[in-house]
Length: 536
Ligand code: G4P
Image 1 (cartoon, rainbow, N blue to C red):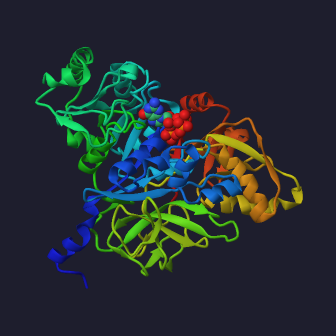
Image 2 (image 1 turned 60 degrees about the vertical axis):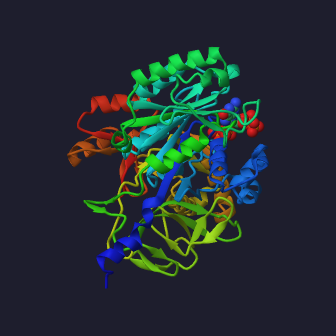
Image 3 (image 1 turned 90 degrees about the vertical axis):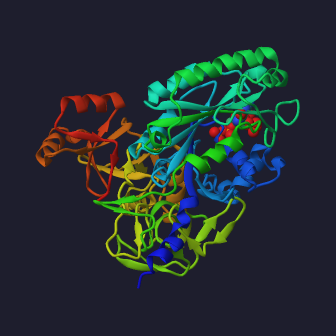
């Protein structure tokens, strides 16, 4: 029996205070520093000293570090939950260094907004761009944080124009730096007429020191930061206000406008303002697409999907943790949910919440929440879990790998075992396997190179198969599609040497470069060359 409507809304609207987001950036732009400062600003962690050294910093972030070190691979903390001012923030990690992988892309299918961190000296870099494109697939709202203004960087307007031009977004500056590099004095919160100043003279520790001014013309600004810096900043702020788009919540939420915060994560500038505005502007969980149907977050039936599977957190056990984004209903520990793919019911007795400092049993969860579900292989990436029969969330595609290797077996007799192992590993979602139409080779495709080492190590450790991954001349994969199946078949027949099948039997084109893939696309207008593929 369903609850009366007044009670129903009371029970299910808890999701409205959830903000489920990720940080997208290029390595070294400052994602780790910003993450920690957000946790600090929220009060989830307290000791600034904890985050000083790189080693300690990682430890503060991940209690799985011992496993990472022992195995020489990076597993990373995939999700982190913290609370501030009545808002529950679920921050999903997007590994960006050597551990950059397809998981990084797929995580972006489980968030409602993203913070794009840009290094003020570098502007938009390759990885930021790639991640942004994945966000754009779903028009995810983006908040831009231009970091490291305490160092010499590029012209501020040039940076704003680069975002506008390269990403086709309207930019709306919210916080402006007062001087940059050696002249950096603080920031100005344009929307609130606040000046943000350091707590002491060395321009560090901005938390807590804000001074309200009447406007940027308030003469106190000259006293606070010096007449020269103030004059220049005033001029810039006037240009910024005139030259860029005023903030518009609707445009932001539709993914066409990005509010921009200049700051210094290291010196804690504009982190508190960023956190405040994620809470204020970023959207709560919305409806999720399941084929032609849209499932509302306040739908009574509990449902969610697996966006990541983390295996071998304990190398002695073949346990896995499936990270599930709850999409509707009110999940309770001990519930039985059906896995749509297998039709099997799963009793969820030990779901985990990943709080900033520790893990907790998840007693209850609502839309937007991330729960980790330990299992022995019952859950795979892309699976839907639900109280309803036959529900299948869509919009969780496979992403074209960017590194392709031929798998060479040390013992050719073990080829069957190897195939089985590779497919099992691919099911976790961080790698893909392809069988070429011609020849007996077997290819593996990944997004980041560390996955290759992980696969080699795990083939030996878990399956007793020794193999090497060698270059095969290809570096681009495109799934083949089109209105007319005959066109695809025709292309496959004519290009057998460069066609393979993924593990579901779907044909892919293997190209030696992105340019070659583009050329093939141009020459074969009736065939679609796709960078993502939704499994059916
Ligand atoms: P990532 O996770 O995006 O890869 O970047 P991370 O936070 O690790 O930052 C990369 C480097 O940039 C670090 O320096 C960090 O201290 C520095 N950094 C981050 N934010 C700022 C900022 O606002 N201003 C300045 N000046 N530097 C910043 P490192 O030398 O590589 O590491 P560490 O030894 O200092 O920790």
